[in-house]
Length: 159
Length: 159
Image 1 (cartoon, each protein chain N blue to C red):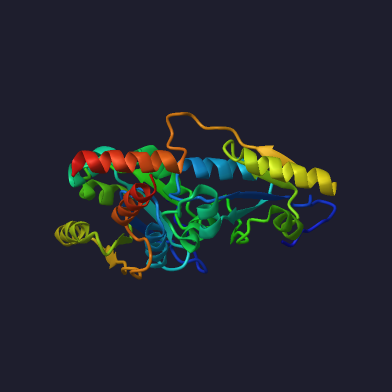
Image 2 (tube, each protein chain N blue to C red):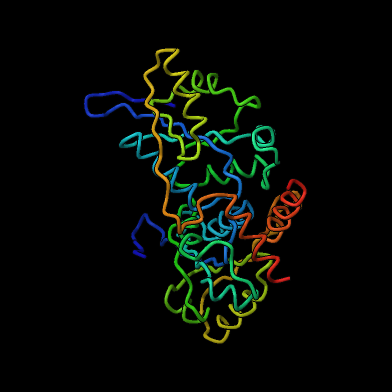
């Protein structure tokens, strides 16, 4: 997280985004591209990938793809500078203290995360911008639930 | 596809890989990383993404994710320089003539493509290396069929 400062060089902003990113799809990519853009030119995008246990606790179901593979795929995406696994208890305050982001980007479907982050930012008097990403067009496969639904439809229609 | 030649610059090799890449997973990424490596230093990796119609004709089922989104996700991966949609009739000879790759990388599960490519290379007397990628560890989610199976298991166990 080296940040160079100089007469001709603006400080590089760090953007933090997070998610489970199970069954990687175009909606994830569009979200991460938008998140990076929210940090301005040369922004660094760090992505926090939720642990298997966190996903299970939040959604009542294990993710299809194990955490190490979800993390590796996210880090292999061009807009992503670094992908790290979350803390097992999904403690956002600790994450923010450790990574010191300038911007936290949340997806249109992450309003619970948005509320927690805004509460932490206000309570601790931090200078962090909370950016809410847009929803994509309805034609796109933009959620893992849609993918799961389509898998089941296609498989049951053909076997 | 600019190729610079000079006293201190080796010609950059072009590697061609192809696939459907439906439900993007870690096995796809590992294959593409290995494919790029097969072209040596600074290789350019072009990925041919199969059309929806081609997938349907070959596998009897439409892919879960539409072709444009499969292509965009593949092109967003760090090892990939360019991702293009296949020709509708999946004519490999036309692809090879057009893209002039130095190396064609095939997955361990693409032996039919390997055979066709080798036949074209032999018949036309081309200087193309055909590289067969290794299979990954059995622990990894390395095929779309495994993902589909897991989706159905997890969904049916929890609803």
